[in-house]
Image (cartoon, rainbow, N blue to C red; front, top):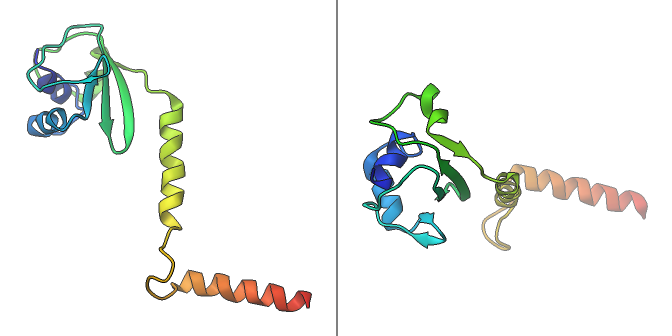
Length: 126
């Protein structure tokens, strides 16, 4: 079975064309090498998929005949993604929320409150 069809069948990607595009962009790897969408996959192989800034590691257990229901997906794949990958996204989320380039735009309401609280705290110490 083609790898793009497999990824679509086990519901990693919503459409087969999205799976094909991910393969062409190099977001799908096997044996640390990018794969073409037409590469055949067999049971027992490890696939690394870069999606939403997470490197998912999936082991192919079996090959489905066609797209399977969400409840049956676990029969065809095993997710072996380390927990560290998910923790990286939590840190990234916090970094993006509070990051604003210096000198860009005016402070938000939250920024102004933080500045006011800081100024009140420093004036009380004097």
